Length: 317
Ligand code: 5GP
Ligand code: MN
Ligand code: MN
Image (cartoon, rainbow, N blue to C red; front, side):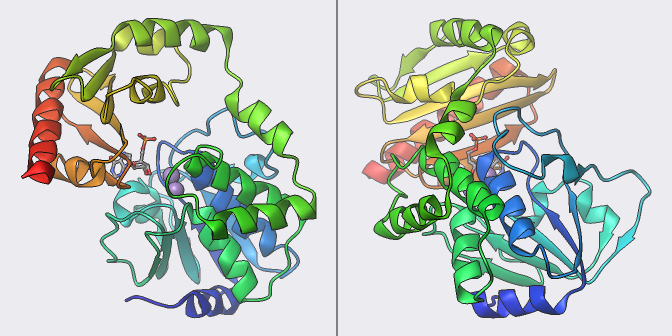
């Protein structure tokens, strides 16, 4: 059932025992929106747990509360009043779905969200789920504190490419300005966000070397095979090297996950990659989407390229 932001806020106010969660393969918006909400509720005496069925990336160090994250355990059952899932649809929360017994409130901005949760607030125009959390705090007259502001700001930066992408709106920038007034340090956040290990930078060089162009130079494909994946502790952002090539509309990175499992990351300048991702079992946003294809890397390459070409031809038809 769809709810208004106010109704979402009231559901949270009414609940005493709450679990917060988000998607596997976590990113800055995932963690920023979750911890932003967590910090905004500090002082309400609620019992709040954060569960995530994955490890955290190492570029989110400006956010307080990373130590609060717990992983769901097999066979564990947690009963609570409300499970709030942020920046995700129910299909990407992993084992949290089996472990937590509670009605689900879904706060999200993915256009591919199926809105099947008990309570859904989905705003596909919001630049980030962190922006929805910002709006929620304003709507409910909850208090911002520096910790919440820092997390929400990090979420905004993460999903807008530091306010570069087309999802950046005047509202996003006004929100960011207000967060800076609270004391957020933009330089520290970007410094930590962009820093990489030496091996990851070297791996980026090898990843760039794999880029090939298809479809008259409109598609750029990057391949991270098993060896390359093992030498790069973090491939976040690699796909942007392919996206930045002049003339490229769709950039795609396919990455070894297992012998018969391939992760797909797509970025576009105009084509709707969310639809393309959905056609191969994934989802996301119009200009940034992804999927998991249960095939080996080379089989996945053909599937993904065909899906992209089909999607591009459909848009041009
Ligand atoms: P990334 O390429 O950074 O992994 O993901 C880009 C966007 O697509 C993110 O908003 C992410 O949530 C979404 N996305 C990535 N992989 C999947 C997937 O397998 N399923 C769905 N539904 N969304 C995905
Ligand atoms: Mn996300
Ligand atoms: Mn997001």
